[in-house]
Length: 288
Length: 243
Image 1 (cartoon, chains in turn blue, orange):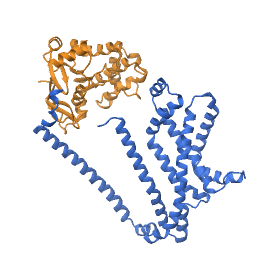
Image 2: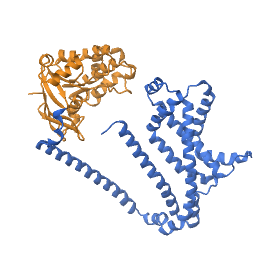
Image 3: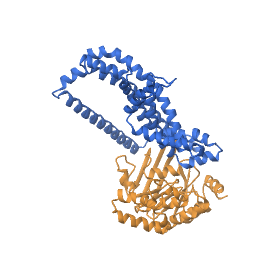
Image 4: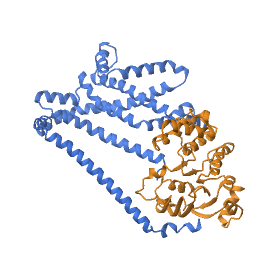
């Protein structure tokens, strides 16, 4: 140890290493140049292909009119606030309920047997039926029952329907994550004396969630977009506002405006989770 | 000419220098044992030899050709070098047999039936014939490590790198793994191995290198190094591990 201290300072790369570092830099530069060129060529070809197409002027006037965009902006903004509210309520609900269903499905306790059966039937049924139909059934069927105390506003009914649909997907994603955790993890948690509930919450679920972040994001972004389905049961959201504008003005720019709204919240969210995931992986694999 | 020749090798992770001024020549049929405490650089040296780590300075030559050059095709070099890891690193989704035929078929273009025969022959020789269709997680540590050795040997490497392959095993399972290494050494396989098994190193090595703090502090035949070490640090280390 004594003679090792100055080593870091008095080392200077050999000529051979300098040549090699140069070669690495050149390789690196070539790679970067290649990817830039390929990207520009492909993007350029796509853009040029669209711009030279014979129908482009009509498409541009129909979908990309600045005047129409400005005109529809306000009503779509008001509508999109409804989408955001639905989404903010539905997303946490879906995650919590999905986790609950997943946990019930993989539990082994005998007194949960009926719930387990129910969870299987629920997941199979709601993943099998198109969301549009679930929405219609819930939004029309539930008020028709004329039950006391059950909300009858389309907003709440539509939100509940979406939660029902997406909980089924998310529960399966989480269950797959739980099943992928190696049994030795449970064994070491058991060995530390953790209860099965503690094992689940402190050991199994955190690892399971981390593994399924990409498919989970698929479902959450998909849920974000599917909040536009509520327009079919009379909720005045961004989709409805855009449709309305389009049919009055005979111009589709409002649809593009609504699309941009959905993109604006979806893209940063997916980038953020991607970044978090990569950071987590780097940390766990001890990369330097 | 040496099969493998390392000159002035240096490797650092950030500010932490893990290997410095390492010179090592390995002739055909040599068995070079790297000993030294944890963190002395044994594993990193092996990983550099297999191009799993890019070196920061120095030259590694394999068969007279510099392989530490960034322009060299790393896969072409690794075809010729086998490596076995401390944690076995078998592919858990494949059976033992499939683990052993994967590289033969995909990398070396060996016909499937031939690859199978080769793998079964080695598995049989090392007492794993009945485990060919089992997945690795169902095996004991010793069996897994033997399977990993078979996987590395299947492609007939010209150099075998073994990274503390018995360090994760029960003492009673160590023997069955070292048996294979001993047999390979006797058959003339060229090997570089990092090990904590001093008795084994003494028995099979042609050269023993004592690493400390990233450099090869002392090297020699097993007799020299184990019975009459020159360096005080080597004596201290041997005193600790041999009790």
